[in-house]
Length: 322
Image 1: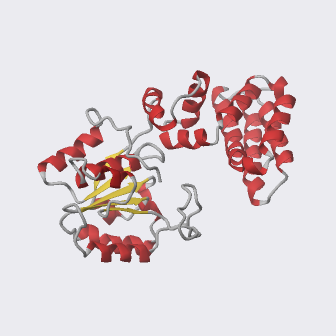
Image 2: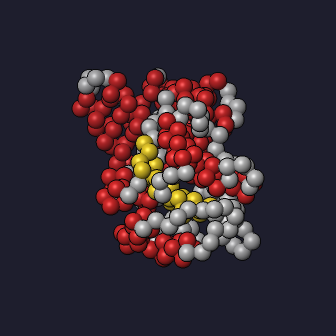
Image 3: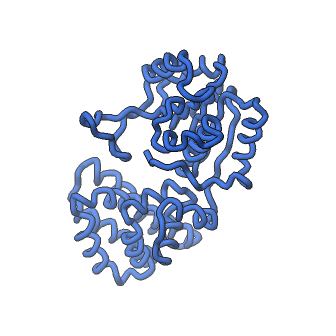
């Protein structure tokens, strides 16, 4: 978890914020909010900021909220696959189990029967509600159908179509869209700090309208790899040199995350090229895309030799438009 409240919400112009603030100031705040949209477009940030405004309107307990130690701020996520050693905190990217289970919901319900610790109510952020087991979703429904005074639910969903209709119907829905390039340029400095100008352009292109995606690429400095891939896509004659560079870099154990992102990125670049070609070379290019997608899927699952995979993937990319 990050240790600071989000800065990337313009409260004066953000339509979702104005809807929430209107309810907050009217003292008739809806008890359940469903935040829907693609991953990484600010839904969790919004929920944290909304929770802070509800629990601590005067900013007295900001440090508690920033460090996720406010007793009335509850964040429910998939449990860790492996608990950290005693006295240590889990890494932000630690592996988690596949779902939020019914026992977590039951423990939440027991906690909600007690009085709040500091504030006059509680904020419950579930990130994401898509991850609830069926039994957990059914258990949560009781809290949404019979709300307790002061408890406000912020339910984050990347795939609202899979939710129970009865859950959706109990919530006020706020829609979050992908950000424009200008919005990304305005908000990313709060997330990643300063970058060379050429890296800004690459990162914004990689982000595809998502702050979360941009942060993930920034954290592993994928811009360096993307520059090489773009160079190869534009000039296939550089394929041998760039392939050698990528094999020397990405085959290292410490480069696993960049290697996995490389496997995802090459088929995407080929697909983008197909779209740019407007149907020209369609059979040849589709075969390259299909083969690269299949190889990317097998590479991790079957623990294929990294250098061999990198060489073949770059070979697919360099053949575009030939």
